[in-house]
Figure (cartoon, helix red, strand yellow):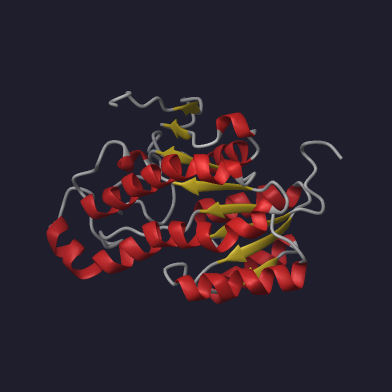
Length: 251
């Protein structure tokens, strides 16, 4: 079996019914993986799963109990779990509000628990729920972070906070996961053409990367060897090659 051949591999993608997640699902399925399309939108998850011959799994990533139940069902039915893409994410800024308008404090007041739950708890609970099964097969996790976690956006500081937390979690967990044979890394995209983009940003904007471009980056990091564990990878768009971000040594 070649390194590009994922037949026999079971992969789970959260937020898999749209945007970057859907593109990741398609890429992994084309390589032969059985893909579990995890999404809070059951109908959309079932549609995508049907398209790729995968499995739909509807649950709330912000719930540890639902994570544990979902992984238990997946392993019972499919026999294993090898790859996990923790991609589900939301913003506190409403979708109909422009990037330079509105009050971030108001949005944070209304949606803080939701944003923290999906973006941060959803990653932590995902790792906790899957690590034991991944350790059986030398598995890997990749997380969709954001450039906002490295350079906070004033338009949505709550979102930026969660992405900064995800970056710290990935870097901090990597050594412990590596001792179990599990690799973890994260990708920090800049603007990507998904429904999260504010309405006043033109879809023709050259700075917006197509979802498949970021999906390819996530796929590449998912395939990396143990020597790259804990890496935080950044790309500013289609004209900016994926590269590992170097952090200053402050110890």
